[in-house]
Image (cartoon, rainbow, N blue to C red; front, side, top):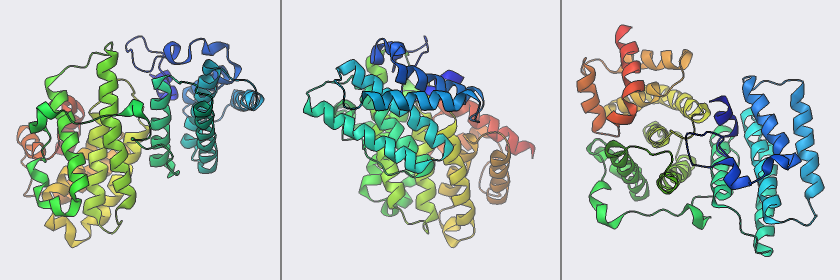
Length: 360
């Protein structure tokens, strides 16, 4: 699990899934000094709970030195892929450290390498494009770096609605009072999340089915990229809108998390959501949108890390839910189902949060 989190979302060594397999994307990448040292850097960093170690500077400096040596040399497709992979792993380390300038510098380097590939007609594996997209989006969420790779920039990430299943693209009834606040594009995004939830409720994930995993990954990419754009464009004063966007992102992210188990994104979003909800609680907007705010609170608490943040969610729910939420979990799930809530995927963490809330 530590290795998966360390290399997320660039590559995967797990035997349990066919998605983003290292040897498929990077072939003999272990023989590449830059990529192999970037892997060791990431693994060492994660194994020490993202604290510096004596080996850390050596792995990082060796990675950068070998990348610089390759720049300007004759590069074949495997060499370019390995160089991009090494840079993406560096980006993963830097955004975990909160180093925004270095992240943006490395992302600019990735863009230059992609332009080089276009000029030389070098084809990169689809997995490289997915890794670039997700690392860029993750960094934007965590440290606010400027995004360079939207969901529609790579044909490999294309996703569209299934015209034969139009009935699943609907706005859950709990959100209807907020339709005018959300606007048409955000409403469509919520409909797409509801469709993803519908799929997860009726299907089991086959981690060996590359095609299905790729389709799910693209579906998530188109949802989460648009949600981030709405988050950036939203007025911070409108706590209801911002809170809903963050809770929606948590739902979309957690609906398909079997491949990547990293906690950075959900814990970060959950912490941000808690801050937004606290501020919204002080305004008249909370009472006017009480049900939506309670849904946000339960979603945030469900996916918060154990400890202070989760305890703060429990306190907020006690302050807010009196006279509104039923005391039984089964009835509470019905309430959550008016918005977005997967009984199949969210039951475990949701019930655990509710039990902790009920005991306090």
